[in-house]
Each structure stands twice: as C-alpha cells, then as structure tokens.
Amino acid sequence: MTIGSVQKININPPLGIEFIGYHRDKPISEILHDIYAISYYIKSSQKEMLFISIDNVGLLKEFSDEIRNRISEATNIEIENIILNFSHTHSGPATADGKEITLKYNNELVNKLVEISVKCIKTALPIEISWNLDEIEVSDNRREVVNGIATMGIRKDVRIDNRIAYLNIRNKENKENLGLLIFMSSHPNILKSDSFVLSNDYISVVREKLSNESANISVVQLGTGNLNPKWRGSVNDLNTITDKVERSFRTQEFIYEDIESFEIYNKKYDINLMKISDIEKLNERAKYASQVWELNTEKWKDAMISRMNETLSLEFEISGFKLNNGIFMGIPYEPFYEMSLEIKNLLGNDLILFGGYTNGYYGYLPYETEYQFSGYEVDINPVVYGPITGLWMPVTIEESKKVVGNVIKIIKNNGVNN
Image (tube, rainbow, N blue to C red):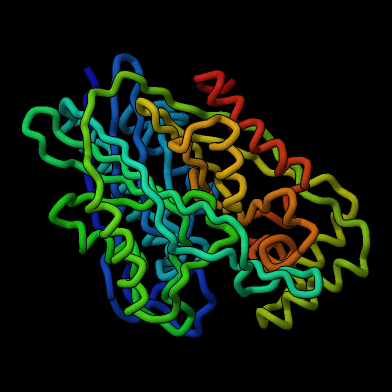
C-alpha cells in the first residue's frame, strides 16, 4: 500500500526585499499573488520521497543542500530522496544578495519547509494517482539567429516541446484531490522588469482558475532555458496562457490507479566548465555584458584572469522519481528543451519528463548544437551571474552531451546512484 500527503504553506517575503529574475531598480512593493511552498510526500514499502515545489526563481545549490539536510534531520528521510523544485518565477524574492532582510527571510523559509515536510509525514494516508498527457502551444524558441549569433527574438520553423503532463494525487478512500503537479515548458517571465509586484507569474493564475479541482497546484518546468511565453509584458498576458492550460485540463479524463511502480533516482558527479585561454575573448565578453546589462563585470574578469587555463568544475546532481509509467528527472540548471525531447524520444515514452530548477540553481545548460550560436544563455549569463552561482563559464559541449546519456542510464538502471 502506498501512502502520501500534500501540504502547502505561504512563503511571502516582507515588502522591500529585492527581486531576482529580472534586474529592477525597485524592490518588491506590493503583493499581486501570494507565493507558496507545496510538499508532496509519497511512501511505499521501504521507499519514501519528499518533492517540494517552491515559488522562487531558484535557490543556489549550497542553500538547497542546507535545506535538504535540515529536512532530512527532522524527518529521517535520506537527503537523496528529498527533491526541491523551483517554479522559476521572475517576480519572486531574492535569496542570495546577503542583505539582512534577505537573510531573515531565508531563515524563515527553511523553518517553513521543515514544518510542512514534518506535517506531510504525520498526515499521510492511502493515495492513488492519475497521469494524463496533452499538448498546448504556449512557448516560442527565443533564440533567433541573426548573422550567426543568437539574439532575443523568435526562431521560427522549429519544433517545440509542447507537452503538458498532469499528475493528480488523491485520497484513495474518500476520493478527495490532494494535489496536482503540472509539467510543462514555458518560462514564468511574463511579468517583466517594469513590474514591481510579488507573483508566481502565470502559475498563480493557474492555481486560481483550477482552485475548485485542487487546493495544491504546482507547475514543474521541463526544458525551458531557451523558451519564452508567446504572450508577455502585462497582467492580462497571465490570463492568456492560463486559459490554454485550463482548457487542456478540462478536456482530460482522469483515471486513477494504485501506485504499483515507485522509484527514486539520484546521481552526483562533477561537471566541467569551459576553459578560457584567450584574454581578448575574455575582455570582449566582459565588455558586452557590461554594456548590455549595465553591470560591473570586473569581479568576473579578474577571477577569470587569475584562473586562466584552469579546469573549473561544479557538482552536478540528477534527481527524480518514477510513479507507474510517468518519470520526472531534474537538474540544477536551465536545460534547453531539445534535451527533453531527445530523452523522451530515445526512451520511447512521452511521460518521461526532463527539466531543470531542481535541487539548486547554477544557470543555463545549452543543447550541444546551440553552442555555435553563442548568445546570452551560452556565453553572457555566466558573466552576469557566475560570481553568484559559481557557473563562471559555460558547461563544456562534451559534458552537455553526457547529461542526456546519464539521465537515460539512470532510468534504465532503475535505481539510486547508478
């Protein structure tokens, strides 16, 4: 018998805290939508998992591991079986700027995540699930290639990962819906740098429109790094994408079943970053990022000069789960959607869902064919955010290729740390 529970807690920050996601010249000034953490607990036989959805652009890997350790200590669940997943809203609070208001919020956030994790375990009861799959067209490939370089725009005539998957969890006895996980590929960046309100972007509106169906709804991003929503810039645009999600949801016939197959996946290894050996190229990157983003890039440049020709690496973690025929695998990066499509195609299962913003955040993980076009996601993001996240340079093409193979290998091995 499989038991489980879903619990939600408000994680609104204090007004006056800085944003993260877009550069803004003012902090959060009002609340458009409350933000939440939602914990999904599943236990079957000797296996148990906590999957915790957090309304934030993404927490740094170190902070994510601190949270997982705290939850593990409080619940006795192994840290590898605790999965944090971030909604990636661009209208949420900063957690890494070191300011007093932020540090206080971080402490409160950790305590709240521990609280709902413990509550989940205490309230677990027999559950059953339903997987459903559909397609909706809500995103564009944002890397338009102009004169051989990727710029922010729309790349036409390419295939997008339009899948939207629903994992419904309900009380087996009284059939009450406990929670809903929606897996899709659409950047939660509809509200842009001219917006100063707290929001989980379109995900907040999805929750409102489907509130009669479930009180606990999370959206899990798949390969979203090189996608933007088709409609952006206004509060009304939040409704446009949400209407499409709602129409898809209401066409589904949810057939529930017991959980017969339950696996938890985890693998850690080091992943190499590109070396920089050309001082001229280094200066060009720093200058471009400085001009476009109006940032002081001296810290990045000085660090790269001091580490010229050094092999840089980061801890890479692949985490996920299998419930019957549906599988989610996540990494602490923003992967390009081509990776998600390749993995599901190679394994022949449309319910194999590969995404990012899981157990930490470093930056972008480009698909192997995209390095040739450079652009923000490949070459500039490390300059802008590398000093904060540790992704000082892009992941190497070779390591990018390995990620797909490693995900497939883990799934085929059907276990932890394979």
